[in-house]
Every structure is written in C-alpha cells, then in structure tokens.
Image (tube, rainbow, N blue to C red; front, side):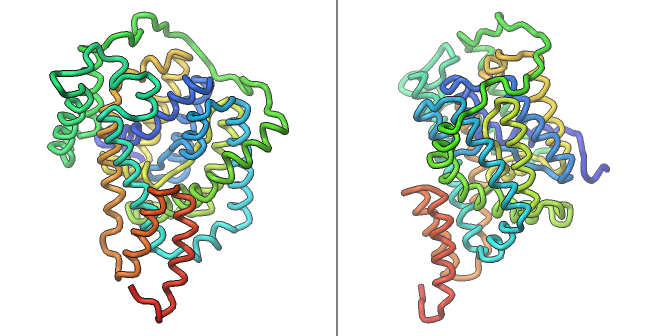
Length: 399
C-alpha cells in the first residue's frame, strides 16, 4: 500500500503540477460556455481519485483540448459540449473493448510517440509563455494581463512577466528540493501575490455551504446537438486523444514508473476515459482525458504515487461541494503567470523524452510531427507521422 500511496509534501506539490493546463480551460468553459462549476470540478476530482486508486500510480486528468479550445472560441452551447462528452465516451469504450487501440499501438512506431510527446511539450511551453506575457485566450477575454491584480505594470514591464520570471527562478532553485517542493512553493507564492495585490477577486462575498452536484443539471442534448458535436468536435479530437492521451501517455507512464504502471495499458486508458466522460456528461462537466503532458507535469513537480491523485481529487471535490458556483472565485487566487510557469516546466520535462532516439530517420519523424502540429494540429501530425514512419522503413529512402 505504501508503494502505491504516499501522502507527503512532494506528492502534494506534484498534484498541483498540471493546474496550468486544467484551470484555464475549465474556467473559460464556465465563463464563456456556461458550464456548471459544481459538476465540472466535482467530476474532475472524482476522475483524479478513482483513476489513481485503480491504476496505483500518478494519473493525469486533463480537458480535451481540441474540444475545449473550439468550444471556447465559438461560444458553443452546453448541450453541444455535453454531446461531445457522451460521444467520446462511446467511441473510447468501443475502441477499448474491441482491442482496436492495441492494433493502433502495434503499428505506431516509437519515433511517432516521441514526436507526439515533443509536440505536446512544445505546445505547453508556448501556452505557458502566453500566460506569462498576457496573450492567452482567457487573458484576451478579460482584456488585461492579470485581471485580478490591482497592478498591471511596473515601469515598462507587464506584471505577469515580473511574476513569471521570479516564479521561474524560484522553481529552478527548488526543483529537486524535497523539503520545500517547487510546485508547492510556486502555488503559495502565487496565492500570496494575489492576497497582497489582488482586486475584484470577491473573496469577501464567498459563502461556504453544501453544494452537492446534480444529476443531469442541463436538458438532454438533441439529435442536432449530437450530430453537430460529432462532426465539429469529436472527429477532430479523437486522433489527438488516441495519440497523446492513450498511446503516448501509456508509454510515458511505463517509462516513469516501470512495473508499478502494469495496469496502465492503452486499452485500460481508453476505458478509464470512457467512464470519466459518461460521469462528466451526467454531472454537467466538460470532456476529460488523460495525457502525456499532464503526467510529465505531475512527475516534474514531485508526484510519484497515486497519493497525489487522492489529494488533488479530494481538494477539487471538497472545493466544489463547499463553494459551489463560487469555486471559480477561489481559483482566481492563482495568477495566470504562475499557471504559465507550471506549463513551461511541464512542457520541457515532456519534450526531453526524445533524448535517446536511435537514428536520423527517427529525429526526422519527430521534427516532422512537431512542424505539422505547429502548422495544423496534433491529430493531423499523429496520422501523418505514422504514414511517414512506415514509408521510411524502406531502406532506399535515406535522411
């Protein structure tokens, strides 16, 4: 039991490692799309808790980024988003139960997996930098660098760059410190900044109560919602989910945890996400998945066991129950630039998985996937990468 679950400062710090990916999309989907805060954060916490207990190692929980980004950018309706959760759950259940994912994994070369991991890592780094300099989608919506801070600029420098620089230096200094974990220090630093310089956060209006999530808090989606979600959200998301949240994630979990991650297979990752999305649909939450980037984030900041999942899962569930619809106000205590620092270090950790590739053809595949990801999207890059990798097996083709 002690090998599977540890509850200490490092596990707690590591449990916060992926907030930079999770919180911005979750908060934006509440503010822009009208998602239910209680059901959304309770379902996240429940997924963290149950997946950690089952798999017995640190397990990441992330929003489905293609769906989230498109839904936010187009102000999509709640029934359409819920439709995507339901449909993703159905597809993942079928792919996992039929063994189709094992066939996909069999014909996915290691270089393609590393390409997906590098591309995801670079996207995280770029996203982190945007949070620090103030150009992310959520900051653009607020039309300010740090919406909940009274000071936006010190001299010529935006406050986010200053906070991000100090936060990055603190993280570097404490990255391998077990007495004062970097993840915990950077979160506390961010909260301290908000308490000192904060404005309009609205903490004084918060009331603690008992807010149990409702089953089906929204009307059931109709056929038009389901068909729209299938074409616009699910089909573009599915290849990215299989590449990053299943194959690349399962590979990275084995690399980090070895035999301890024996339960983390591609098939079981599919089934885990399918169940999570069914629960999320019922509670009015957003589409959820695992992900290589999330695992790298948790691992980089100290998570090594399922204890980190238990702690962050309980934190989210308790926050949802106690603060209800006001949970977003509490989470606004974390400046965007602090979330950016977490993303940058998580992205670099994940990108370093390409170290040790065997030959020039492998590096060609990895860099091609990165280029296609930056120019188009990760789903297209994953599919193209598999095709290129199999073509390059022909000995007459050299790089």
